Length: 96
Image 1 (tube, rainbow, N blue to C red):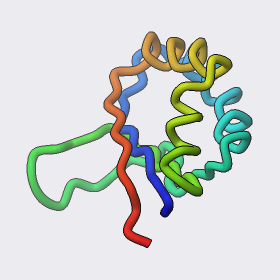
Image 2: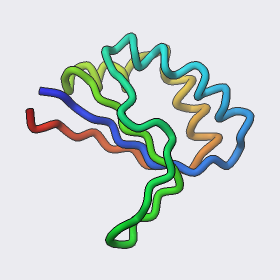
Image 3: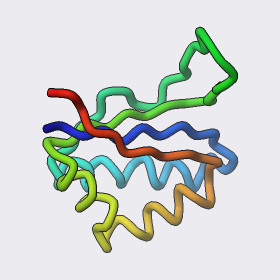
Image 4: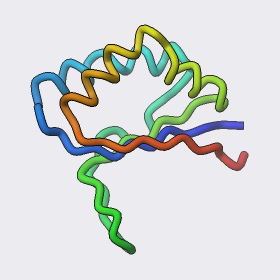
C-alpha cells in the first residue's frame, strides 16, 4: 500500500532552504518516493488550515516512507529545513 508524506511550510530563510531543496530530491528517490505536489501554494476552500506552500510525497509503502524519515543521511537536511521554514509534516497511508 502506498504512503504519503504531506508537508505544509512557510520559508523563513530562503538561502538555506534552497540548499535543502536542491539536495532532498535524491534522498526521496533513493527511498522510492516521488513528488506528487512540489512547493505549490494551495487554495483554501474550507476550514481554517491555510498553509503557505505544500509538498506531497508518494512512497511505494509506509516502510519506504519511514526509512526515508529515519535515514541518517537525511537528518542534516531535515535540520536545515527546520531552521529555514516553519513546517508541519504528516504521514498517511493510501487506500490502494
